[in-house]
Length: 118
Image 1: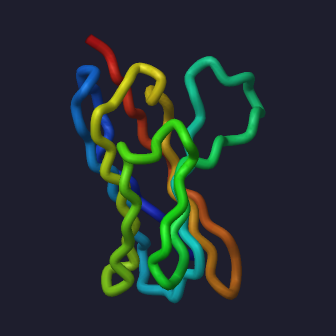
Image 2: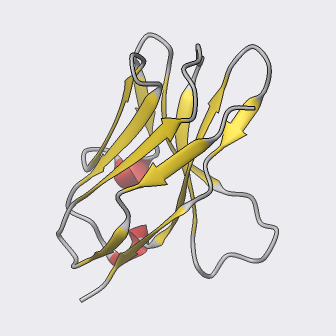
C-alpha cells in the first residue's frame, strides 16, 4: 500500500510563500496527481476542493483563485509532488492534501495545515 507523506506547511504572513511537498513511500507509476484543500470552516464531511492537477505528461491545471500564484510540479524519479504557493492570502488557509492514482488504487496524503495570517 502506497502512502504519501506531506511537508512544508505552516504559518506565513499574507504575501508570503510556502512550498508543499508530497513523497510516496515507494516508487510507483502514477497517472494524474493533484492537490486538494479543505478550508477550516468546512462542514464536517464536506469534500475537499481541487486546487491543481498535473498529468503524467506534466501538463498543469489550476482553479481560478490560485492561477498565477501557485505552481504544481512533479518529480517521477522521486515519486514526489510539489506545490509552490506565492503571494498567499488568508483565503488560502486550509488543510492541503495530495492525491495520486496508479493502476491499483488512488491515494491521499495525510493532510498538512497552511495558515496565512498577519
